Length: 566
Image (cartoon, rainbow, N blue to C red; front, side, top):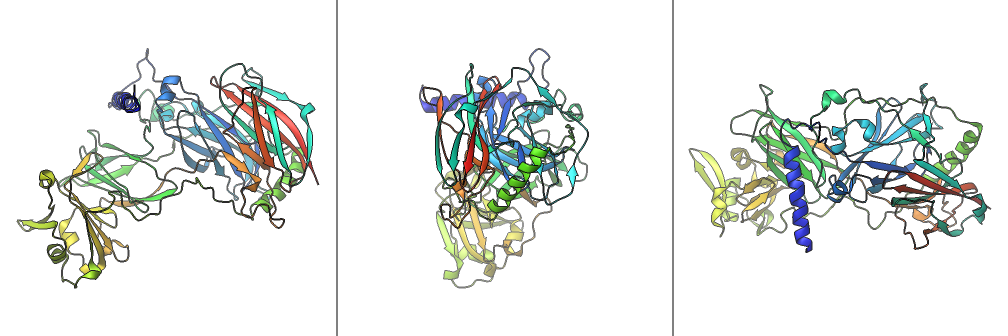
């Protein structure tokens, strides 16, 4: 079976599955419950100072069929406090092999026990206790505020967590020494889905399994037995519904436009479903992006309601009493100094950093016709500009109402209205467009071929660019708005002290409480991994932690102590 055939079959299976689960009012049959996804979560350590990076690996432990289908392409990772209030919210690309990345702990949060939770959109159809959870301890030495309660956690003594401490392998190294180790993996009988290694300050990694008591009191009110959240099989999604502005009732088959401003200026179009809901997949976008959204349906006064992309249900987690042992206080002093020094130096930008694209080419590529208005004499109206300078665009008036047509060799061009864009924002009020003073328009691009974007077909594209990138002062429809939207964050599987700019110079300190983190290890035939890192300017006792997770979710760890001296 060739690659194209496999891809087609995979897409067909996903489409059929989505068709089934997206049926309105679809309920989980008692004898055929919907399958949930399963995620395991590993961090570089468990004790942090505010302002540090938390590195993680998330494993996809879903059943083989669901994982192979890549049922979900996005993993939501949140840092919440003991009162279940969100502190950090990020999204990462997710697949059969899981994902890895980092989140930055805010410098302003109070000291306390926090929780990292990870879930997919599909997992929100199930109780939050099925999410991936990890408790971490965070100290803010510059704030007296503390998030602290009186709850406690159980230590799981079951066979799901096993730790081996290999004190016989203890070695001593010097500052700024390159360390090269060949380490035997933890003893694991079952197949593993991942193995990570972290070199961290002694005492900052806690070797026990936390038995989480997560309460999700609003689950039955929000979802219950109904499938509410469809999986993100393509990427980050924007979801919501269209309602009548006056009655609040759902509006079916309304035309919805979505533009991603900046970068390539991606445009998406779709129709609302029979229940007023809509779904957009926003692909290959990273960081916070500004979206423009609009909706229209003949003379119906429409309103767009966009769903919150992160979970909004009220959760309850153990609010632990925050205290530091004498050993932790001593360790915290060293950690605070290292974090403070490290924060003064910027991380080197990695070559594979997935940043928002900054090219000026639009989503439709190179236009067939490009008109730079600066090259021509000034004309009094925009309609005359089209007539004299853009012959591929025809303005036709019917009962005084103007319409745009794009001329070309494709016979179906006149069957559909063209997509008209101004600074990448779609517009449909032709009178409003033609009222724009020509001196406020810099250029006009035209694509004279039928163009399909999402569910919508257009009779060509007319894309105008204003001189000041200010929409030429035009009034936008009442049913439209701009939205700041969070897309994907950068994946990151490797951390080194030498990641700072200027590393290697004696004047640039290489400090950090995690000397090394790697969530993409290569295991040799002898069940060993090769680890290489620089000790930087740190001194004291550190530990090398190898963590393996089996496909059944069992965790095995091996700890090797090391000492760094002057």
